[in-house]
Image 1 (cartoon, one colour):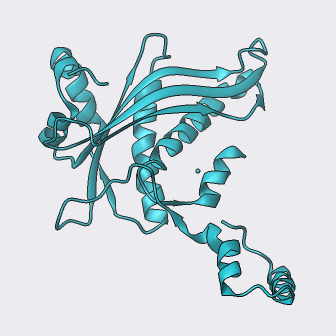
Image 2 (spheres, rainbow, N blue to C red):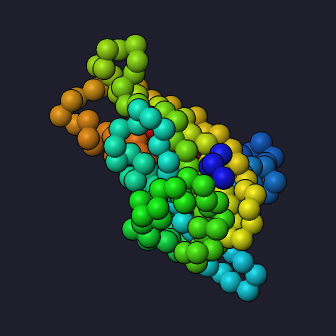
Length: 223
């Protein structure tokens, strides 16, 4: 089968002043909840849940690049998607995420390319002991703004994500993701740093689709 980012902590004086102002306008607990709701966890669009009787979720991630993608982007993105899912889940006290080693995933890709091309990620997940396999197809990945002759950085990427559960042939979820970063001045000597930062941003956007997070964490991606 072909594989189809806190509510900022106020200084105590500012917090007390704001609370006094709110109370002067008759704001009760309900209104305060809306103001402080940035602290609440947001549910992901495509949550991963542990198998029955388990608290831990075992995840494998693969990224398949289409022609034209620079070498190494796929491996770096796959690694960072997994590490971001694990870090975000830990930060928000979600279900523990355990990752299948990238070397094992890569071995499946390189040792038998034909089997990889024909195989089903659900089968690979079961083979490696993963509960879920996140299968990403990376269609586009650029780092400079197309209208600036390479003088301004702007990461852009287009990808399709399919999530397979071990033992189930059909994906449990599928979605496209189009990413565009803010404009940044382009210092050629810093391009490798920008590349790694943008791959991290893209990985976090994928991670937010699957694990609980907080709105300020998501907002931080836009800075």
